[in-house]
Length: 218
Image 1 (spheres, rainbow, N blue to C red):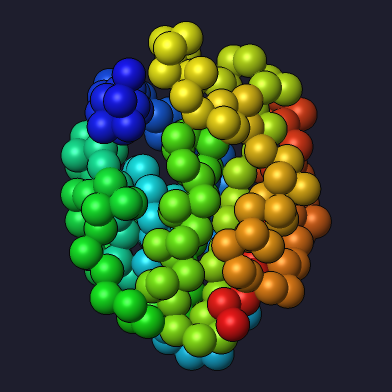
Image 2 (image 1 turned 90 degrees about the vertical axis):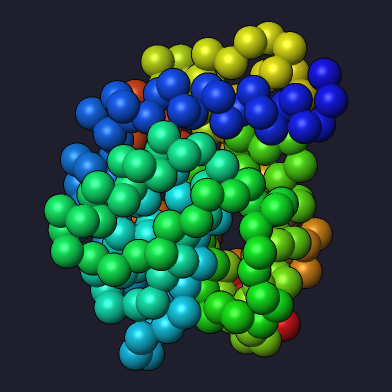
């Protein structure tokens, strides 16, 4: 299985899940809680340029737009983007959604103040590549906000990728906060700060250990 076949397999999986994905999604059940936590993690003074990588059905993009930021959101699954666009339309939010894999996204260097990557790194064959895209896209002093979880704790919330595809994803079982901190450090980010303690109740069912980290591009 080639790298392009891995990407195509992941995209096809999320295309198929898109119509049902939001039925049980954390950001749909508790949108206000997510917006509050992300607002704290953004630490933004005024309206900022935000890029959401691997937006899916638009969790971070919608939250950021609701906070008054200028948002561009990218995803390889056109079906997931269709759900995100409809959610933005219903909420009256202005988000520019772009159909593109993270590695192929046409992003100008130093064009964003904040980059969000939520529940994405575990789906990637090369998670460090996404963080490099984020670093390149951020202005000096910009902030990346990464959120994910250890999905192997709750089998019902895991993907059912084929065994061959799952084997190619280094974090198929999910990420710990420690994993994410090391990825951020290796990618050249500093001042990693955790924000998940701000959730009044756990954001995911099944006892999934989840984290929200921000870090700074120097």
